[in-house]
Length: 88
Image 1 (tube, rainbow, N blue to C red):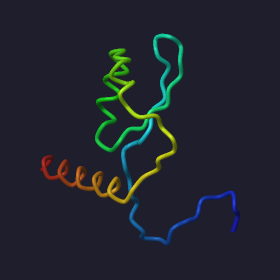
Image 2 (image 1 turned 90 degrees about the horizontal axis):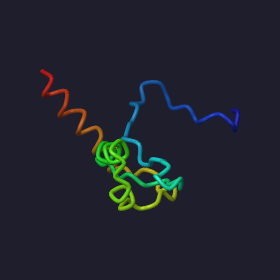
Image 3 (image 1 turned 90 degrees about the vertical axis):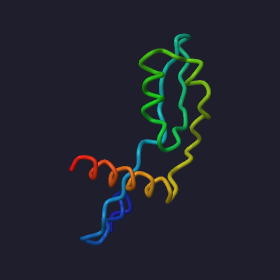
Image 4 (image 1 turned 180 degrees about the vertical axis):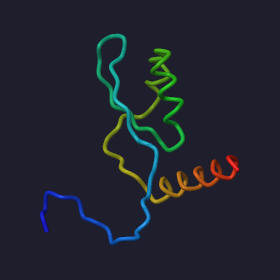
């Protein structure tokens, strides 16, 4: 097994997904930031970025490689189930 390749999962293992948990941006003063996005906050953060609401973005905690928790994946799966039910 090549140590530089990600570990492969057995065939049939479900793919787990979650929203991105960080965002990088450069503010109006030219300062680069990397912020942590708890699950469910990605769209709000993107809107703040698009509308140049720097003070709102500054309220997010810095990204320090927080990683993902099991509940991040569960929350995303529940959101997808709800969206698929509404689409029917």
